[in-house]
Length: 219
Image (cartoon, rainbow, N blue to C red; front, side, top):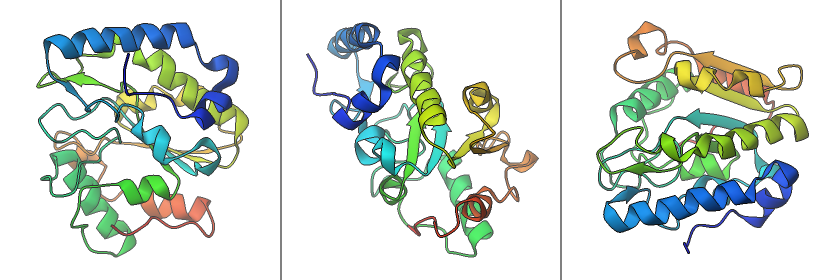
């Protein structure tokens, strides 16, 4: 049907929370969509965030909304773009705050693979999008699947940091047990809102303070 498969570690971790029938329906609809129009990320990258960050390796959960919808940008990791691709505006603002907060330089690459491999689950709530049509795949009900990931991490792990930027991500807060985890909730880094509280919010140093011995990889 598709090259996209949930990594076995995540399948086992989700257990009964994984509604396989519903996920199969999503993937079937996705295949139909790909036959008639361009869809991002490309086949094989839909579950890329899960492949790079196994459940036992997760230290930070950074929640996005849906993938970038322009050519060559989406690679299955929230906010990340492949090497050599121009930074989208939100990512550019994330990097500005990252550099200011941690006293580092602005990264040269928009790829966040190093973060994912260090334990940052870069999870979009909606995992696919039609080309040039933001939000177009919310109708596929991806959120039922990704909400199950957030809830399972909250239940089965402890001491994680959940980063929720913007009202959409903050809407996931009820899924998180804040007696066990640390939540950083704030303004979205998009150009429309970044100057209303994202800049200067210092989410990166706050994460490091809550996770002694863990550091954000410099990109």
